[in-house]
Length: 405
View 1: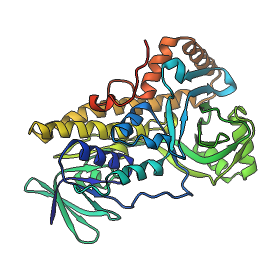
View 2: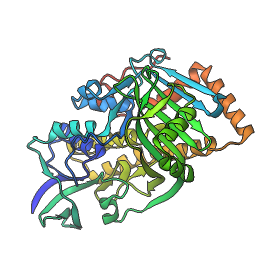
View 3: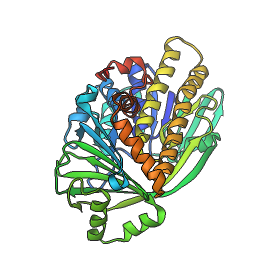
View 4: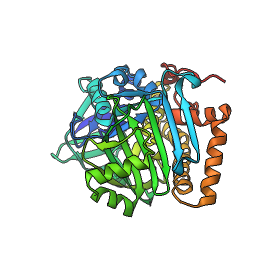
C-alpha cells in the first residue's frame, strides 16, 4: 500500500490543472490516476475558447507559452448574431482594454503542457494509464485498488474523471441529468475569407453555431449544436451539401466554407451533481457539472473549480485547519455559480432555439439595444471573460489586466 496526501482521478484538463496547482501551493504528495497519458493526436480536432481567467491560471503555473505556441489563436473580436441577422452584438478587445479576449487552443495541447509541467516532479506519483477498480474508506483514509491490483491510499480524494465519473459513483454522489434534445457537430473548416481573429456565434432556430478562429487565418473550428433530427441529417449529408448548409447558416460571414476534417458528433446533456463534497471527497469539472456548449464556458468553469479547490485546500494545510471545512467552502463557492451557469445556458438555448416571429423580433431588438450600451456590453463581457472576482487573488495578479470603467 503506497500512501499519499491526495489522490486525483482524471488526467483531463481539470485534473491536471488541480495537480499542478497543488504541487505549486502545497507540500502534498499527490497520486495522479488516469486512463490515458496525454498526447497529441493529429486526428483529434477538439478545441476550446479559453477566457482571460483560464489564461491567468496558465500564466500563474508558468505556462504562458501555451497561448503563444503553434496551434493556438488569440481572438480580438467576438460577434454574436441571431437568425435572419435581426440582432447583433459585437465585442472588441481594444474597446474593453485588453490585447485579446481569449485564445482558441487544442484540448490536447493544453493537457500535454499541464502534464509535462509536473510529470517529473518528485511529489507526483503517476498511475497512468490505469483505472481505479475499487474504493473504500477506513481509518480516515481513502483506499483505492487499481486495475493491476496495486493499492494506494490518501487523506483526500478528488474526482476529475468526466461526466461518467467513477469517483462520483463510487462514493455515492447523485446527479440530475436532462437532455437538451440536441447534438453538437465539430469539425475543422476551410474558409474563403480570413477570420480576422474573430470568434462568431450565430443563434439559429435549430440551435447555435460557433466558428472559432484557428492559427491558419483561413481555418476555423465549428461547434454546430442542432436539434437531434437535424443533427443526424447534417451528419449524413455529403461533404458538399454540409458545406453549403454551413455557409448559409453562417450568413457567408467568411465566404464559402469547406470541410477540412471529418465531422464528429455527440449528444448534449445538462448534468449537475447534487453535492460536490462528501466525506473528504470533492469532484470538479465535468464530474460535477455539464452545461450546453453554446457559450464555451464548460472547460473554463472546470479550471476555475480546480483553482478554487486548490486555494481552499492549501489555505487549510498552511493553517493546519480542518480539510472538511475547506471542502465545504469550495462547494459553497463553486456549486452556486455553476448552477447559475447551467441555468443561463439552458435559458439561452430555449430562448434562441425557436422560430417564433414575435420572440425573434424581441430578441433582435434586445441585442441591438445592448450593442449600443457600453455599460451593458461590459457587464456581459466581464462574465464571458471570467472577470467576476471569482478567481483566487494570488492567481488574479498574473496578467489578467483590468477592464476600464
